[in-house]
Amino acid sequence: MGERGEEWEAVMLRKAEEEESKAVKKVKLVTSDGVTMEVEISTVKEMETIQAFMNATDTDNSIIFPLPKVSSHILSRIMELMSGEYDQELVKRLSHEELKEICMVANYLNMKTLLHLTASAIANLIQNKSVEFVRHFFNIINDFTPEEEVQLRKTHEWAFEGVDED
Image: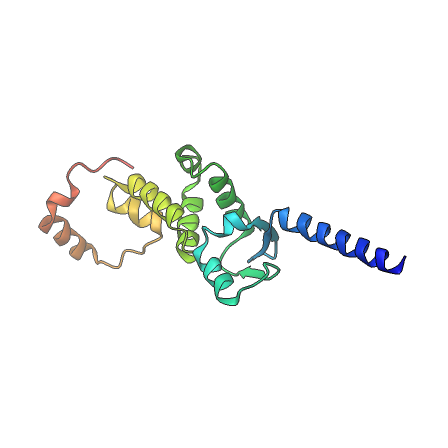
């Protein structure tokens, strides 16, 4: 009976391991505001920064990855965008601040598809906009004197033609 009990235990252990391997593997990401999100491995594969670390350490996916430059709000928006397979309509509904922040996070995490999508959306948004709009959008402080700005506008008149109203 002892031998059969050990065999039965071994069979049950193998079944449990098989079930565990069938389960969707997840990785824990901790945002800058202390929120922990469990994300499927398939999603993390698009985050090349994290994927490179996982490949280098040959981890069993139980490691928690801190994301000190990513808020929970932005990570949630990224997950939403990824679940919609980077839907253009979802991108259009983002605020300007969200769009800029997601673009920076996509760069930080080396998410090429998301980076391309958000950079394109920003480029379309600022296309044909005034210098003032672009400065405001990117929080750029004007360091030109009024005289320098007048001279630049005069020298490069062509750059100010066809500019949309803000």
